[in-house]
Length: 384
Image 1 (cartoon, rainbow, N blue to C red):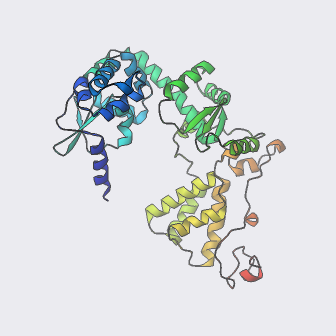
Image 2 (cartoon, one colour):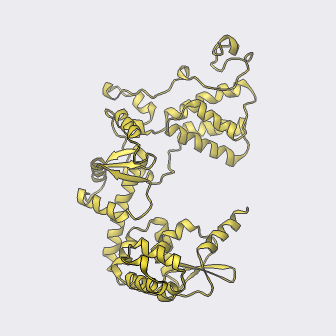
Image 3 (cartoon, one colour):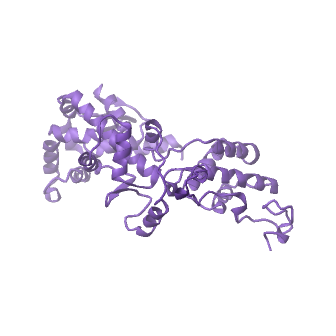
């Protein structure tokens, strides 16, 4: 299906069909009872399960007229949300058929934003009453509080993404080493409570911030990681670089990745998008310490074939080089190469990979040259 068509269908799914209305009270009246119930659940309104549709609409209107409710929701609006909020504050409504649902669903789920589909066009707005509530806030103080909360939240996200598991005390220590105004334990918990209503890629358990890669009951894997990092130092880049890791899909564009991409593009795959997606997946698999044979399977999964043994022999060292320069959780964010070159014996690294350590499961003909580079036939070497 055409992407723009699919996007349009998703936007229509969440929209009110009909004429644009800019009043909160009017919009609540025309929502379905199911939508009203979901909205009431997000605010945990008492007695909501027994309310009729009109009662739900009235209760939600009274709740959303509370300026503190509006303030609390806007405080935790993320960057993409905030950009849209500022756009909608400037006009009665905005006509836009290109907005992604992920940009507005949080605001919609809090009753602060409404979308309409009318005459085959999409319209988005913040109701007049919500705008009035926002403008009644002491702007300077609110924006300072919001910036502070967002900064603390970014440090928590970055720590979860860079380390997998990180004690809250370490996050506070890193924050305080890079910022003028210190973060306290009480403020840390206050931020945690405020953002807990949003979807997160981490959770707090026994004083540790833990990536949601680990299930809550996945004690074995969490303990294994903590054992791996016990005597290793934290990789702590400067503030600007550290905060890049707040985005879950961020990774360093290393020279090793560039070399791998260049080889794939020149010798194995002329499709630019396919080559880029492959390299990104290889980087992710290296960060998760997947075995080389699993990484090589990514080529086959994309129908990218090795036409000669020389191509296979060339690609393996490039992948290993990427791995050795990828930041991994079991090194507390360091690359294997960084800790492998450390002279400190207490931080000795065991996960740097050398070419002769690899046992790569590749389908190789028994009479073809062995991938290990010995010059012998596979059946007379590693294939015995």
